[in-house]
Image 1 (tube, protein in one colour):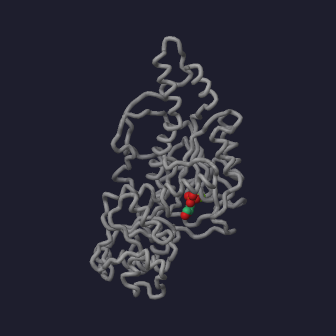
Image 2 (cartoon, rainbow, N blue to C red):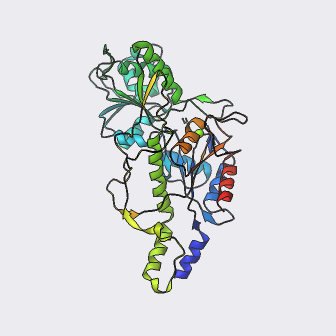
Image 3 (cartoon, protein in one colour):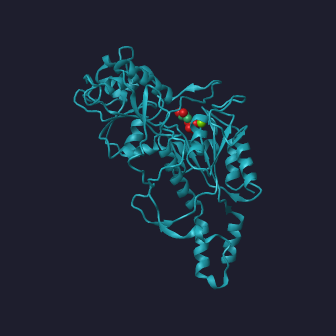
Length: 414
Ligand code: G3P
Ligand code: MG
């Protein structure tokens, strides 16, 4: 039996290195799938000349739907099975805010898609701009709800509700209306619509799932993203108050998202290695006549750690304030803990190298370069970055597309 299992594992060895992929501009582009992407992922699933499986996760700033829906879509487009434990969206770490805020206004996405995501995360009272526009159509004088929007909007009296936080989950589909409402709440007395706080300091906290200024779609030129909306709101806020807008950012390149990603990757590697763990246990019970091929340190058992408080030796991604925005790190006071209800699990050494493939120098390459020297940044030319330009953050390698990136990394490792 031991010999049989060894044979299986020999055939399906698991790499000590790993991959993390950006999604938009690397694997997909609007409704299109990047043609080389399915093959690149099949290679990591073991279809390579070394018969090795390479663990991988996805880290996108995108969102607007549940992680489950995202996996379904990715699985279909890439013709592989993607599970929820492999995917981090821009708003995924916002789950950590559930115990902090009772009434939240969630902005972005199609109709009430983001309300559903926030409710799934556990937020108690989730409102969307359409609810406010239904409450009082004069809030947005140049936009009136259509029947579909009226049907999904809640009936709420916003003169009696304190909005505690504004969470921008996904790209706004109606910048004018959303900005009007966000600004009103930021300047309000305790987050109540129709009020004004003269000192502009009692409004709700403002959170963005990411800060990408542009992103790649199926159009030839990049399109403005959530970061551009943030710049616009900050300019309007400063015009009103003379003050900097205070914003808390999630997503890449933020340090907190990096820590979150490392934990997700480590859990996923553990999952991928589980068969090897079974093998080891089997070998241990039969230690008299079995020698170990694997490094035993991979399989020691201990309690998992929550995110630690150590300061990373990094380029501080929260230091790029301009004169209109003050950026907060959502993770600076309270670490995210993916190990809640912690149990005895297997402790692995970190991946020897994590190849991060992205298309946006400002978020992806900066993300991979800033936090841990074992991450290896690869910039592809299928998205925001265009051939011939000088990337603002320098990748370790530039490749034509994701397949070339995967082939390069596998060869570099063997
Ligand atoms: O809105 C999504 C976009 O800004 C970036 O997505 O996958 O390139 O991080 P991604
Ligand atoms: Mg991208």
